[in-house]
Amino acid sequence: MTEVDRAVEVSDERVAIARSTIERDGAGWKIHIADRRAPYHQRIEGEISVEPLAPPFCPVELTAGAGGLHGWQVLAPRALVRARFERPGFQLEGIGYHDRNHGEERLDDAFARWGWARFHGPRATTVIYSMVERDGRRRALLARASDGDAEVLPIEVAPPPESPTRRTGWGLELPERFGAGALTVSPTSLIEEAPFYARYRARLDGDPAIAAEGIGEHLDCDRFRHRGLQFLLRYKMLGAWRF
Image (cartoon, rainbow, N blue to C red; front, side):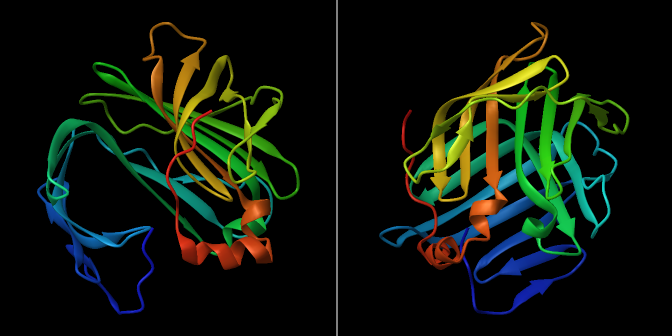
């Protein structure tokens, strides 16, 4: 979540943000990170490779009502991810995910909040997207990709009733659950949070054939647009608070 005041270099094959770069590597990407972490500015240096195992989803329009265009596309619903870091020294390898969003207006002008989660099984990934638009309209998208599947278009399904919330360390109201159709996502423990955002480990209920543990996020655009919280953005994300 680093902000930089230097020029960002962009081409079809490479993006450079300060000293960090993202480059095409066959069908995947190679990410070199040279940065500093909050709150004590320790150096971070390492490389991450992303090798897709399933093709991308078709682009999806997130806003059902009138307004500016907001799109979402999953470029790699399932990918083999390898990380090799010198500072701090660690290595890991596992199944990962890569998506992107784009829009033609401010995000908080179109949405009040949203939840998102993904669950990696042995050979398939399930993604759930639940949104509340600025006019109160509620939508949910569901998609599943298996290794080697053809291109997938997420389907729109009915969102379940809104759930009670619990308050995080920043005072963020985090829903106890959200979902799509019969599938329900429940946060279990926080990984990171900000005054308007939380990322967490999640449990999925409703289909025993899908991996039950995954990762999710909650974005509160009402809090994001508050002037006081805009001021706090300069302090970046802090460490996780446990439930």
